[in-house]
Length: 241
Image (cartoon, rainbow, N blue to C red):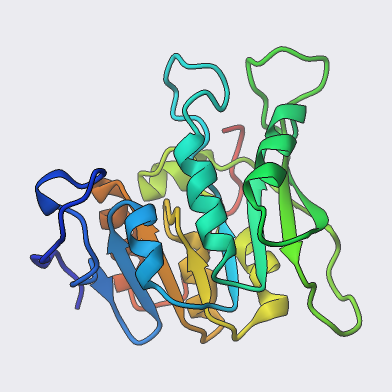
């Protein structure tokens, strides 16, 4: 069973009146533990994991220019990089986006870059090419063995998945699984859990996962998806997001 449980939290500069903390998970089952709060407060209590897979909320539709309000994300990425030997971070394909991610993860060396092609997706942002490519930066050691997967994955847009989950920019479980599977059944951490797809991908592989999400409405979405108790697969045939 999942639900909302009272938590005893300690006060901090980011948690006035002590509203944050990790005394009680927001959701927990045999595979997944989800915390509601600022990951900068919670990461210190998580302990070591095997891999971090995360898609930080770089842009939330506000008036600030790209990455103008992402200093806190940089801090969180650095903190997360101290907990695992491998880290996969989603980022944009812009020059500034690439520089931001690579400069935020200082603990681990940059290993390689994977790409997620979202077919039919476009953006009002300037440029002669569509903004339909998402880069995933992998830091730390790679997995060993004969390569079986491409460095590129393609899906349709995520519009129907967004409508189904209630999250404005979800990543398909298939994409998260493509990243995580070479490292399964290692413990996965997602400090920006969003719609919960990384946690579901780990659960589908029979592995343990830890998620942190600051927005309670997104915690509710994650808990609802996880409480279904079945393998969560994405809708087929998404059109332009």
